[in-house]
Amino acid sequence: MEPLMYPKAADQNLSLLEVADDWSQEIKPRKTSKELERFLIEAWWRGELQFLGGITRVKTIGALFKSTAAGPLFWIDGEPRPQTVWEYPDGSADVFIGPILKVPSLSPDEWSDEHCNHAFEDIAKHWEHSAFDFIRPIISTAKLAERDFTNWIKAKGYIRPEFWAEPKPGEVVQLVKASQSIPKRISKKKVHDIVVLYIKLARTAGESPTKKGLEKYCDKENCGIPRDLLRSEFTEVMGNNAPGRGRPKKIAKINRG
Image (cartoon, rainbow, N blue to C red):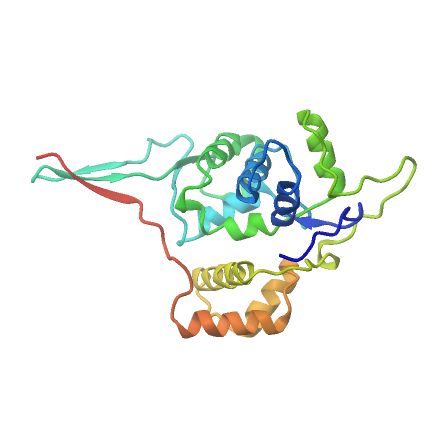
């Protein structure tokens, strides 16, 4: 691991993964980067944190609702609770074992934070479930501004870490657009997750994944990943015919006999 350069400039936006990694180097009692990543993600789903780049909870859950690659059951408000158990004459049964998210209607474009609060809370509680693999890369690579992170830290009463500099009194900080903040360290896992996510999105939309399409997607989402790394990983993933782990298994077979 290359040495960490402290503190990061106050006007430098960091990805959620970067924040979790840097914070894990100094937090006491000790917590891993993975633990802090989940901590931050849960805070975002509960509306305590904001991301840059227009990534909102409503848009994210809407993408989950529309995708055939997603794994939770959705419960439309006003309708009967979705069936979760299917019994058979031989005494066996299929049982749905994933999360159930209650949403206001069949039209995600009409949803609001207020109407989806219960679903947001359920996602926060069950974030480690494989049902959310489809949207995990979107959240983990989203950008945070120092101002928003610091406000959250202080509101929660936590000790503010020192890896991210605070503006000096009276200093005006110009927020850097997400596209201007490129991580110095880009892990292969991050590149792989972005490529897999693009492939899933393209296929869900009925399109064929292409290198050019991947580059356009990353430009739009401000991924900050060099073109050669994207193309290389795309070739590896598509060549192995393994765009991802696929649709999570939601059904468990039980035998009551």
